[in-house]
Length: 99
Image (cartoon, rainbow, N blue to C red):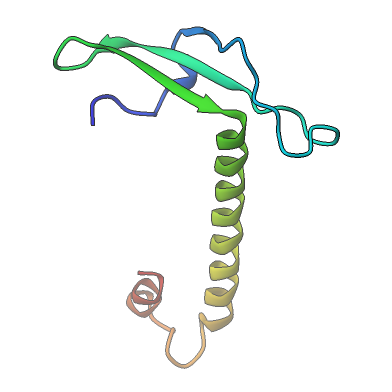
């Protein structure tokens, strides 16, 4: 895959699509919005690269980050309960439990 999503926010927006997609329950949920961003570099073949992202994707990404943080905190709490006890007294043992 050419390019990287890292730094996507710093790329030059080429504009929002003119249409929004209404949701199933348009009275209580705002329409989905899309953003298009042009990559300043071209593909290896010389084609223009345009990245598209929707408001729904933003929400899913945010939820995935929150879930990952929650899981990491839970794992750290479980590990903290075990450190200093019978099987996790040495640094090497703790490191193996983390890995």
